[in-house]
Image (cartoon, rainbow, N blue to C red; front, top):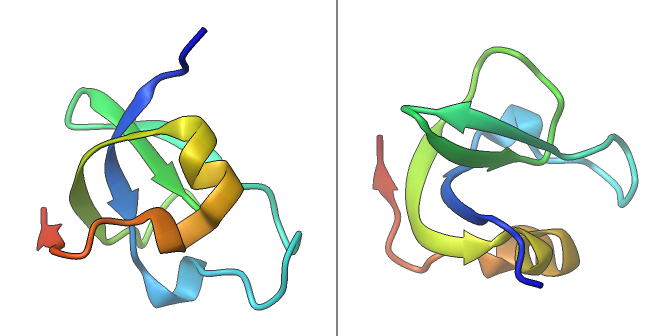
Length: 73
C-alpha cells in the first residue's frame, strides 16, 4: 500500500538536522497539501514544491530525495 505523496518539502537550513536521528521529521499540511520537514519546528519553514514525492522515499533518503529544480513557495 502506497503512502501519501508529499507536495512540499522544507529546505530551511535551520531545520536540517546536524546528525542522523537528531529529531523526528514531521508531516504537516501547507496550502492544503501534505508537506514534510526534517524538524518538528512550528515556524521558520522554507517550503518548495516537490512535484509529489512518496513519504517513504523522503524518510528513507532524506533531503537527497528532494527535486533538483526547487521552486520556492
